[in-house]
Image: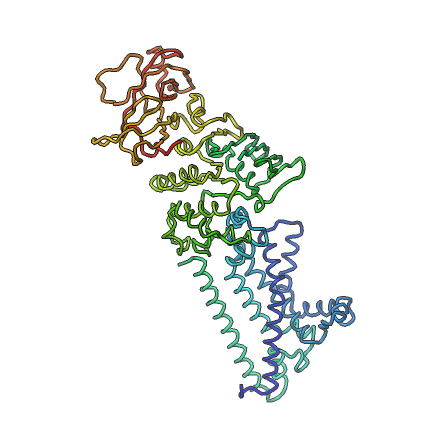
Length: 230
Length: 362
């Protein structure tokens, strides 16, 4: 990566780390919420659905500000996380939290659709064969939903890579800590002569997005082939 | 094995209220579509939770809503064969078969697997995916998968209903072999008289959510007032044994000392058979018939005459071979003076006995 300056490389590496952590950490919760929305009927289901989709509709700046109110250094939730050794305010972990929240609706949506597409009668059949609910999920639901789960995760990763508004509002733009790819492009554009660096980062950004898209397509095709057994 | 079932459930448009006992063997829940048979099976399996239920198997309580007992499906140790097979599309046939033992945390006994594969003729299918199987093959795999969980009771929900006639006659012998060889008790839902006549040892007739009749298969099917799936489906069942195969394409069988001829059956001499004689194929004659082309003439005594609203009547004839049912017109009943106690002959064309109505005994 000789053609990237140290500052640029730092931003790319940070973005990759932030997005990877954001995706992996939100995966279990995303899967659970997607399953609950797809399979369970419970009071407050519509409310949960709305809450999940909120970051998609709200201006990112608003989401970032809400995160600051909830997890800032003065907020109880923020202090609790800090006491647990997981401080998020103005840290890269905060950038990961912001990215995860912003990407969550996309992740849940893809996973939910693929779970809804599974015939629940297959899950019934698994239960009659002696599988507990958890085993039914692990041996039938999850494998059959895998294309959607992978697509959701990759989509979330791509969204996290591009997150800007909520991140910069919540954790600012600190080089090496919270200056992600998008923040770096923005910063370079603010200084005279920064267009070259910004352009290089834009190229990296486009390449990563295309790679993620291709990977998601390939994985989905492979998983679909496996399921249909052709 | 004894299964006792008592349940009540209010569906929109159907009040289900059934109670019955299933002794060892094959118990068929027999009745028209929409009578609530599948719901009974669902409740026994734990997939459908009725308003009130009390279900016991060999003395173990599976469900007792009064006492707040409801065993979840995966802890009932039953096998369920669905009408639509429901194989797992992401697993090979072999992995589908061993799914039950796997999720129960035990290894599949290779000898047991081999026995089931052999019993159902699954050898050539093991490496395939469900998408590459025909309907009949899928259903055989589904039956094998259910057997390998070592069920205390096998539940079958119209396993043949989605198949064409050829596939049906492909699967029926396998079900007979399971009944006669493996000894796994079965609860079998069907609306097809020929299936229950071949397979069931006990019949529970369900109409509009209620049990209208229950008892040994031959006894219930010989009752002229029972026609849950329409008069066209009425027919009695005879137990017989093959005496000889003749050169002219006929097989001679012995039913209670009476010799009958029917088109050649594949089983060997001495094999026990059960044969369903459709009521509309039987002609009655009080006088000894002469010069008929029909080969089978069975003397007997009329035991009951059942007339409904239509032009037809069902006459039950007690013969040494067993009770036969004949569907005739009310006009003939009046003209011939058919009434209980009258000596009469049943006339049956050999070629009227269809291959699907001849099954393995007992």
